[in-house]
Image (cartoon, rainbow, N blue to C red; front, side):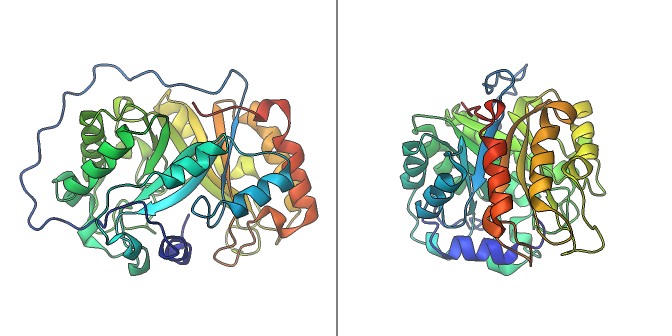
Length: 345
C-alpha cells in the first residue's frame, strides 16, 4: 500500500526478529547458475470449490497474538491465513540469526496459514534505496540471505505463503518499476533468481504470490510478470480512500479491483487473491461497502479464492474494522457466510 513508510517502520522496529540483516555482500559475485526451469507450471492447492479463504493483517500480530485473538473474537472466527511484513533490512535482525519459527508456530497454532510479505528495503530509509535494486538482487548480492530463508522455510512442515515485490507496478517502494533504476526485465530476473534459489533448497512448501497494485501503473503487468512456472498465486492490493484522498474519492470494491482483475484474467490462469484491502469511514457508508464487496466476489470476481483485510490505521485512514460497530458487524456477517470458510492449503 502506498505511502506506508510509517507502517513498515512501526511494524518492523517493534521487533520482527525472524530474519538475519540483509546487506549486499560487497561486490556481487557472478550469479550462481539457475536451476533448470520447469517445463510446466506446478500444481497449486486451492480452497474447496466455491470457497474463499479469509485473511487478516493485524498490527503487532503474530509477534504478539493478542490483537489477532481479540479481533477474531469480535468477528466470530479466526481467519484462514494471517499476514505480516518482514523487511530484508531491519535493525531488530542485526543478530545474524537464521529464521526463527515462532511467528509461524503462533499462526499455525490458531489453525491458520502463515502469509509473509517479504520486502527488500530498510523501512525507515524511504524509497531511494539503490542497494536493493532488482538488478543487484538478480546479480547474487543477497544470495546468502536468500538461502538462509530458503533453507529454514524448507524445514518448516507446512505451507508458507511468500509475497515478494508487492505493488511493484507502483512508485512508492524501492522495488517499484522505474524506481532506483528498476526495469521490468530486472524485476522479472530478480524474482526468478530468488524463486530458483528456493527451489534449489527444496522449499516446495513455499507458495509464491505475485501481487501488483490494483491501480495498474505505467508498466503493463504482462511485462512485469515472471511467468506461471515461477508464480503460484497472483494477487491485488487496493483500498477505498474516500475523502481521505479527494482525488480518488469514494469507490466501490468493484471499481477498485475490476480493471486489474480483468488484466490478470487475460494474463494467467493462476489462482487469484485480494491480498490487501480495506475501506475508510470518511465519505460514505463503510458497512455497506463491506457488504457489497463480499457480495461482489461470486458475481464479478469468481476467480478470487482468498481475500485479506488490512486492519491498521495508517496515512490518515481508519482502516480497522472497529472504526464503527456497523463496520465490524458487517464484516462479521459477511465472513461467516458459507462461502467464506475456505482454507489456504
